[in-house]
Amino acid sequence: MRHRKHTFKLGRRSAHTKSLLANQVSSLVLCGQIKTTVNKAKETRRIAEKMVTYAKKGDLHHRRLAIAKIKNNNAVKKLFSDIAPRFANRKGGYTRMLKLGKRTGDNADMVVLKWMDAPAAAAPAPAKKGKAEEKPAKKEDKR
Image (tube, rainbow, N blue to C red; front, side, top):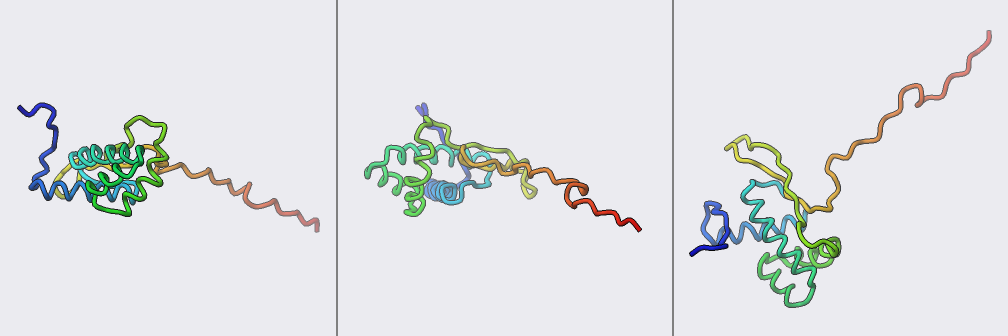
């Protein structure tokens, strides 16, 4: 029986899938966000959230488990030193998926996977002043 054996079949062999997901988690940690398809993002999110949980525990055993899973020492270092302290008071749900629409080549659904506390991508710019407020009024000559 396959109870609770959840995995997306991403059209790859198991070794390729593990490598792909490790690279995506590593890119998410190092860059802060990644653009990918929905199914890949859902699998990447599962692994990334486990890695943050390991990093919150913070001991040597969990550091070694994280290195064994994502195979990138720089990503693990950043995960344990920068990302885990940001989520110290949060119990789960460290990532968010923002839908982008369809990819032009094959019509696949695309998303951006990013950390929850990341700043908004498109913050509104401050309103510009009108022309009357920019320049001081000219003095009138009385001739």
